[in-house]
Length: 361
Image: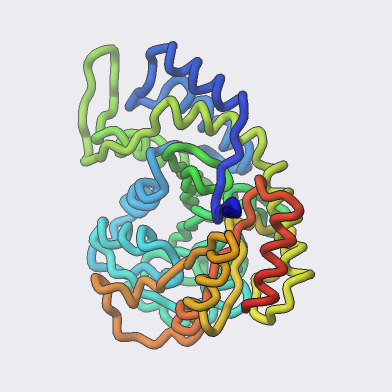
């Protein structure tokens, strides 16, 4: 039987094994205060993203939840794309906000700034773009809208560790930027997330976030502490941080391999509707659009190639059930297929994916 070409596959080696072993035998596995490996990871990721500071959490959903909790959005509107993982919208609801879904651009599949501008009302508080598949959204236009309307820019960079925009790392642009680290992500961890901060009050904001990620605990002195605010159990564990420190050292190299794969796909796949090539993109995955998706994915699987769907639009989900028309999102939601771009792919496997797409799409 042909070995399956996986859609996602983390790149690991002896360094990750040693990091886990060292952490295991240290018997220091977790700290709500975020010391040890967690603190080291925050420093290194802050430096990598060129941000003001970084707060590590236990996953990307928690990062979004905490970031949105910093602004009072109860009964207020947050503008976001429907083409995203459902956590992007859930985080708005967690904080009492109203998600306002807008369309995406047909080429990048990132939020359409023109659609954003038309959707801004007196109730709007936040614009929440998603860097889809690692492709940076049009931040210059979105930042202008935020400035003109006194809004906060919170970026969902779950796919975008290592992506850039105008020669600056994603993580250094928005007021608040949220990352996700997971076994399938470009920077792999068992579970993890991070929030980078760039606004003028980042020092105070950092303290608030670190309190909120650990049940609201603050002012800790020895064994005493206070709880001045509500919080959650969202802190990152030491094992994830240990792996993250190793993965961060490899991230640029691994992303360069992803870009090379994406360049081959872009150059050699005959299909018309496909992800554009950009040196700014980290290519969490590579997407194409096909008319007969179910049949295509079945053929790919029969030929030993795993594919995926990222994503069914959120506004179409039963829980949200928004009766709205988002032209590009609705069409893309029926056609999009994700292809492998992970750095473990061999040249022959890349060639096989290209050949099969050209045969079956």
